Image (cartoon, rainbow, N blue to C red; front, side, top):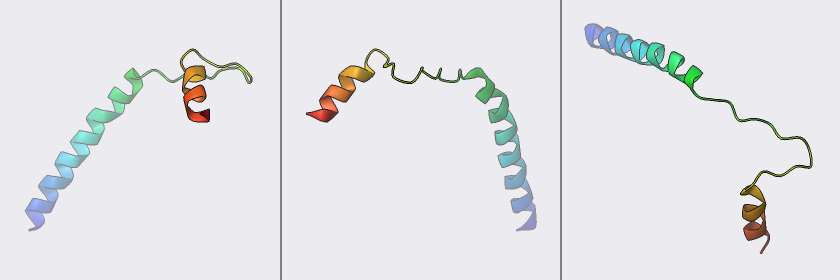
Length: 50
């Protein structure tokens, strides 16, 4: 049982080690200036308001 726990711990550790560099590849969303609405958001807001 202890050897199985050790193997799973190693596999999960490798998985997280691989995921960390992949997170750097994703671009962060740009924040908009207060009061400005991006294209598509305005249309979505109209649908929600109805």
